[in-house]
Length: 386
Image 1: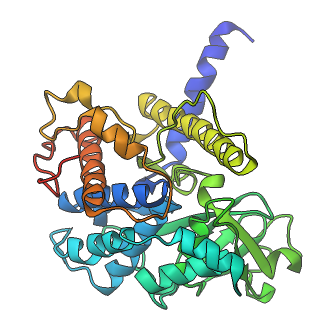
Image 2 (image 1 turned 120 degrees about the horizontal axis):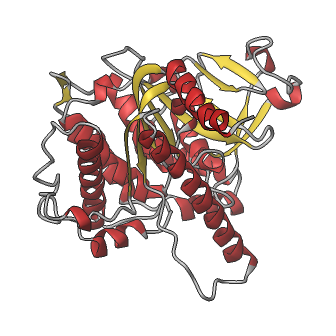
């Protein structure tokens, strides 16, 4: 093989990848506890404001991002009123319920009650989501996919048994190795609990299923009832911490909202096994997230994909002269380092996180995808900034 051929091979590969992708837009929402839930609420606020939400083909989410996405998916069918592509009651129906949840701590009470009384931690966290957000709604109660009108929502968890992605959608839920169940009636609260089952404390979530409900021969190697009667799930971020997988393989335009916490160096990390395990998990997450980010940005630069990537850890100080929304890194960095918890946040912090998601997505979307769109000039909560 000559050097010339070596250089040509990547070009041929890029052309093949471009050709197999569908025209369409997807938004991926990462995990990150309440920090992510609120940051993504700001992103959706901006996307709604510019009329982009109905034009999305897919919203794919993991963990904290799935809380926000599930509220939107349920309210889209139940309550949202659209005029010219903009939900005019978005704040009341989507933002306010999310902020009410963020004013409550649900992780510690679920861990204590699940450890000391009947029922598992997973049961308790599911109960909290049911009480605070979703009631008795199931996957069949979310909005249907209609191109140009409403997207398909994909909630991602990780199957601990097979080691691959378990995706929940209204038409089906599936693991490509175990198989699929069509039109699943899984409670939406349990779907979110599974997607956001951060290990080790909130994990696992167990689905009890009837093997006969699986579509015959829809899986690969794991076809026994042992894998179909009881599906053990953990946080979707264990497999794909950006919710990227189910969108990346299909669409040519990908927007990625990354609310994963900033990774801080520590000269003396804790050595007790619990704290050490958590530190190791965050290290793994940070490395995988970095690899994913390089994949995304590389695809933009190679023109394999269109879209934009933004992060809760972004530093927009370099654009301060051009950006009407002032986002000093000293302030946004503090928001990025809010713990990955389902722990009560004061109202001002909630508003700052929403403002930051709104500002980061507005700037990156306008700069790297649609330069004709003027940057946003006012925060959703102008009195607090970031």
